[in-house]
Length: 151
Image (cartoon, rainbow, N blue to C red):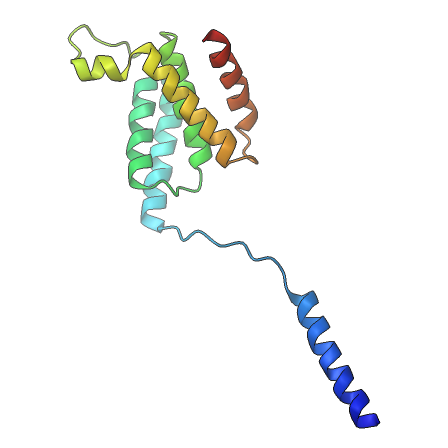
């Protein structure tokens, strides 16, 4: 009887302790430290262009370069916000980098107001959808409402 009780206790404790010991492990994204550092530098430069210089085309170029090379960047939500807002501001003819009269047809198409509004919608929508905990989410939602109201 004692033997059966000990075996039952051992089995019971083994299963219950393993059940309580389990925790949800979220998969970690493996980040390349070199690409992460390069993307962080691009983000910092883009922040300076956005905040101090109002050079929105330069922000978009930095974003496109980073997104193409390293879409897993840990601060991609912030970059999406700056790219979305830069596209939005350019679509409203804001900023210090105006499209030159000698611009190629490709540049004119890329920076056409309709295209820029579409890009702004895409970037800001991706931020809201993929990064629901982001500190930039509320700003993105506000800009999305403004863009959709102008349609």
